[in-house]
Length: 284
Image 1 (cartoon, rainbow, N blue to C red):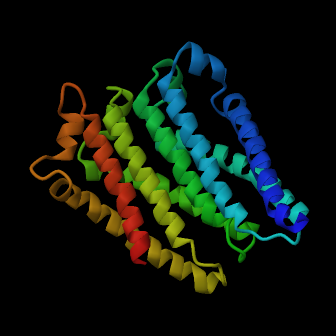
Image 2 (cartoon, rainbow, N blue to C red):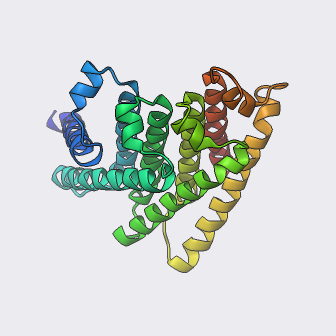
């Protein structure tokens, strides 16, 4: 009987540690990153941008912890210690990734002002997308049985660099000033579309780094080839999305050239990136 109850006990302990990680994560988010009073923003000011960004942050932590749970332990004590220590590391790397996003992806905007003062839903969506993408990258960078902490950190840094590169190239693909739409027009459709791109790109990075690390000479060319081809495929998906998903309508026109930006068009474009990334994953 004790042997039958043991897996249940381990599961309950994992869940308890997980909630402790969430609590520490939200405390770090509101005190170190956004420097706000969370309850005031959510339940007094009813700020939807903060809620969207925070849910993305929580979701990113959940996804990142999946990579940690892949690691086996000799006993429940070692498993719990792994989860707690990796959970603390995930919080640090999630906040560092958010900081990078604020400085290098949303560099044309003041992310804190847009989300806190302006209650900009588009900016909140971009931040949420960044958190989820960061969680996807961490899930594979920290997961698996091969490699070392150094390998994991290198993969994570490369993944963030890919997010920055893709977001900087995105306005050329979309054919409109994405960050002006988000920050000056408070365009939620543009923010949701960019968030979808970030999540799709994060998933592509996850796919590329999924094989177990062998050696730098063996794994780096493999990772680079899969990553490059998958990103090209994702760009092609954006190009054909207008014809396949919404024939006769140009998505960018619906997002930008409307008196009230079409949020539905932004959601469809976001789906194209995220759904496309999963199709690429399943085809590899």
